[in-house]
Length: 87
Image 1 (tube, helix red, strand yellow):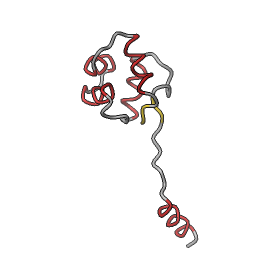
Image 2 (tube, helix red, strand yellow; image 1 turned 90 degrees about the vertical axis):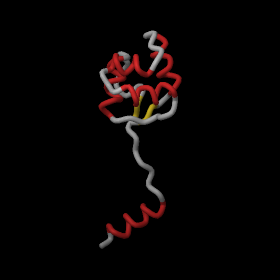
Image 3 (cartoon, one colour; image 1 turned 120 degrees about the vertical axis):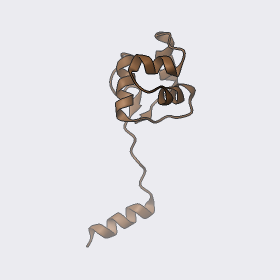
């Protein structure tokens, strides 16, 4: 899952007076490493389980902070897929 907006996450953290990734992790029941990376801006992705736990802990609507991450299909991969479909 990809974080939609770092600012929105920061707004929720400020509202709940959560100052560290460790505090977010404790509230969400997740490992502190990923939470800390998200809070500090070192990462913007996490597992769907982690995203759901964070959104639940911050009482925000599902899908508000995180969106499903869909890998981009390159032109070469798209051409290969199209050729394979014709067989």
